[in-house]
Image (cartoon, rainbow, N blue to C red; front, side):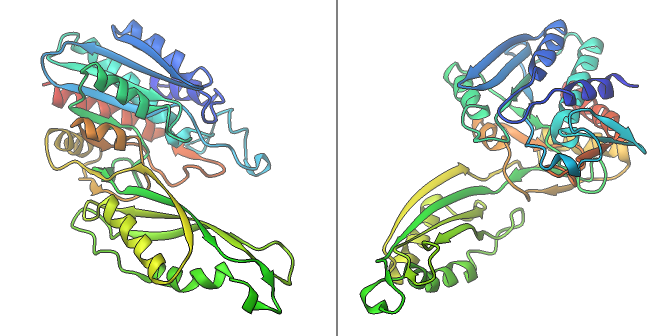
Length: 376
């Protein structure tokens, strides 16, 4: 059994449903300290984070970023084995966090250990930014650590986020950006009444229907060469008292816009509220921004990642900005080149989450190759 697989099993055996860490970070911090890193635990509220750094201020600053928290297991009876007792069957490793993203954490740590053994002195610095709040609200995790780093003048030039980016096999896809995410909590105000006397009531479901039809059918933009078109989706929609003869007096809805750099936050807000007003909707609307879009153009980091994947697989990866958000959205505004590179993501957040055992050591070799290229 390889050191990387052994560490993956250790981390997976620790129940770390968000925001719990389960002792994962302590294991990582001890090993990084032994490799010569200065390790700094950073706890905000109930969230454990750490920043570890090795090297000097002269030269490029490289960072591995990831999270130790995992999503809840879902129905235990649907798992073929205990989600926190990692199990290998037919070349697959099963358990919560197998793909998202404890195998990635193990690969980045053992790759770094191997690199500093062969190159104890290098120009620049290598760092780790690890949180237990990626799967949760993402308020007291990477976001807060980045604020602290900025306040004291730390920088990150290159960042590899170990999220599971691959689609069919290791290295077939890397993320070079992500769309922004803008959510709204909408309350539509009406007047409650009897269904037999609609003239004395105002049905918020009827009021919102034409506006909702326009919002959901609208072509927001065409995207661009790197980003998909903007999408609008309703995630929650509630109205009514439960009685069959009462017109509701209020409707509540949640919606989300995923957008690329062709849009602006102010522009999206103004468009949504303009449509609501044009259709005569009486409303209250609270806006939430969980992240703005970011994009890493072709440069040293993406070239190093592509080269490392070609060495490992003989193929060039697809460059993508698709999918949800990641903590890369907090790191990119520091001026960092950010790529997401990890194992296959087909089973993440699912029952019986798993990863091919062979991919774990392959990811270790890819990360090690990236470090060798960047610090050549």
